[in-house]
Image (cartoon, rainbow, N blue to C red; front, side):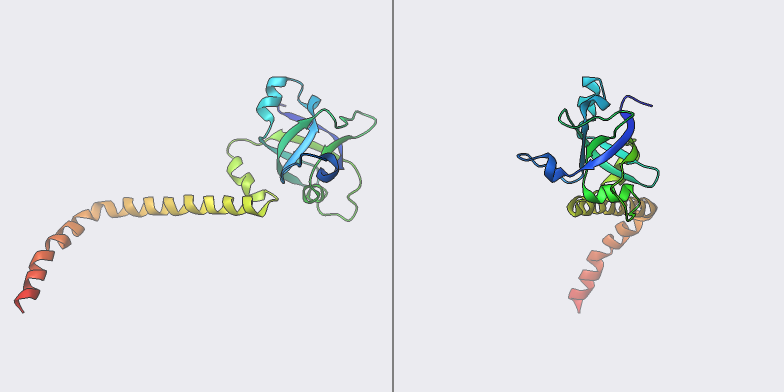
Amino acid sequence: MSNLTFSGTFQRSSPASFADKVGIPIGWIVVHHSHIPEKADRRMAHGEWFEVSSDRGTIYRMLRFSPNIVKGDDHKPGTMVIDWIGWIDLHNRDEDVDAPLKLTVSRVQAWKRPWAYLKHPDPAVRLSGWLGWASVVLGLIALALSLVALPYCWIGEHIGSLGPPIVGSCRAS
């Protein structure tokens, strides 16, 4: 396990009940700061994409820390501030979602990060992720077409050189 991976049993706390004055953005989770003990590691982890996995589901969220949350131990579950959709996805959309879950929270690898935006709970972020991927695909198609057409550039030059004789012949009529 890396310094940015931890696991434990968690119960859900609503983002609305956690923050009276400052709201938590959609797609963020909050855990006790001692899950990542080193301050430098916590600073590196704050606001980064993390994969939250149970035995029934996986979600992607950004991580934040708070000392005001119960960490939990072997006898009682800790608390995680998480949105409702994420919590029921971790329960595999089961009927009973009140039970605590054993979760593993690990930083998303670099190659998975572009895909994490497509799983975000905020529709605007998902849309921007899809538009970003569409622009990458269209850019690659344009690059491939230009590379295919590169050997045939002389055709355009010859067609362009035909312009004056054609235009000149039109004037003669």
